[in-house]
Image 1 (cartoon, rainbow, N blue to C red):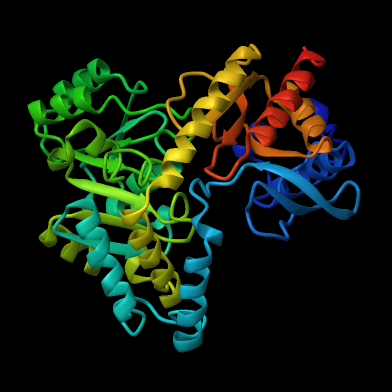
Image 2 (cartoon, helix red, strand yellow; image 1 turned 90 degrees about the horizontal axis):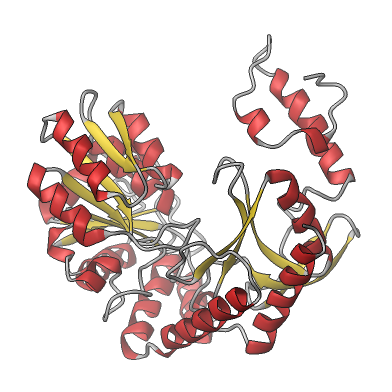
Length: 418
């Protein structure tokens, strides 16, 4: 690679992930030249500042046109619209006036507020667990929990499509990592048969964030119980969406009592920020003192906790937003399939449109961006460089007209760029 003469058409992000030069910082020069060339050609659509609430049509700065314009938003995790719910905003504003802008300390010092405690109690009740701990991010919840519990010599058995925070937590712990084929209970069993230890934890997700498919929980739980492996279930994209009471996929399958650690995030269906781990009281008490991403991070702001508490209250009295989300999801899935687009095996509000190669995705994403459609553009390292995709995030507030427009833009663009 000639780092001073890089044509972005010849490279992808994968080429820079493992880049090694003679100097530690050489990669910055190589990537900078790639980045500037990609911007000049209109490929680099990431990181344009949003200047309005994450509603169905939002305003964003367009670096290629050098001005702000309106986009159709199918990129936000704000599945139920709670981030701009008027009662939530009112609660946050009132709390902000009383408590100020942040917790301004770690939880074990002066960052643990009465509202944080109320939120942890509310999450424990909601998840039907003995206790819960609130982290400042969902990433930190997985990172802190796994790096705290696992030790060198322990084994983390991960679904190959597990989130980066799960992989990183196991790596930080120094644990041995074993990977099983996606949702494949038979492969998982072969791994658990071979390791012959009870110091193992199997990590899975309720809904997988790149494909939108659901975990094969009954079979995986059965295998884990057979071999005495613990289970961590990340319900980031399934909390408030699945299960009669919205507790997630474990509730959907009636297997909540089989899950040792339930992880969740407030940055998806809750429309806020933060994460949590729920489990038995002794486990959560241990995490409070030894989970490094909890102990050494500033706690979530009191007004954030207050907003989430209001959302839980609203949700428990009215699930119409969830009902509308499912109507919209069903409609969108059917329209995309009618258009002959490959949506993989999605079973949720996350709908991928598989493109294939990185170069093809780059071209298509530029065109749909120019047409005013903002979607997730997912390439390596989030997915294989041969399975790149557009990722549509559905919400309760999308209209049928907006969904039809989204499908039309994608269909027309893909058909004209085979």
